Length: 64
View 1 (cartoon, rainbow, N blue to C red):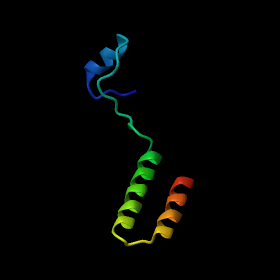
View 2 (view 1 turned 180 degrees about the vertical axis):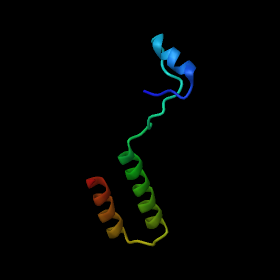
View 3 (view 1 turned 60 degrees about the horizontal axis):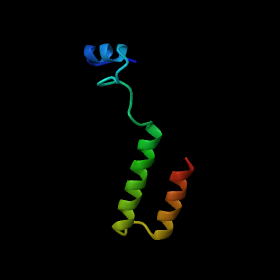
């Protein structure tokens, strides 16, 4: 694991939690799914898509 701060590496060596890590906090799939649900809800709230289209998209998003 790479540390942005040299002190974080020393903290880890002592058995403490690192201050920062360079890795992602959330898997890309979770971020993608969250964004798609948000955008799908946005379209529904503004009556750009119908409720049937909204449900179909939710099923497709959850299927991934």
